[in-house]
Image (cartoon, rainbow, N blue to C red; front, top):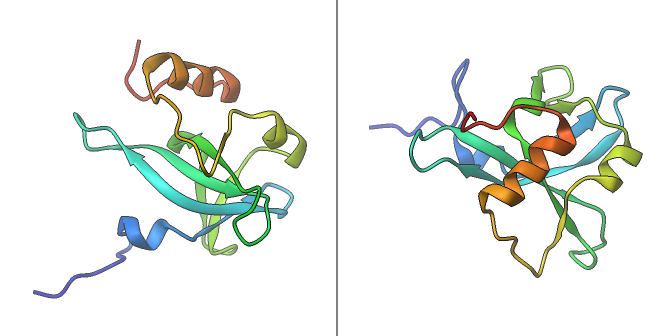
Length: 121
């Protein structure tokens, strides 16, 4: 059986990794490093975007609620309604550390982006 990495509405997780992220002005903000899935629902909860740094040094990761991303076929990447300045103030973690990923951490992310949490409340 053939493994398809992409269809009209679906994309394989390993193909999402490396996809560019732009803001509404067309500025390149970073690239998708990974996605975080909810174990219970199987839905994508976050895209973890790499931002900044050079050759992996000083790179930071920004967990973006999946609902903040829109795929733009013209850009060939995801678009978020954020400026670079907003992104600089957003929740982040260093490439050499791992956040707790508990509900408090996730609530902080959703509060910053002003989107409802994927798990409901």
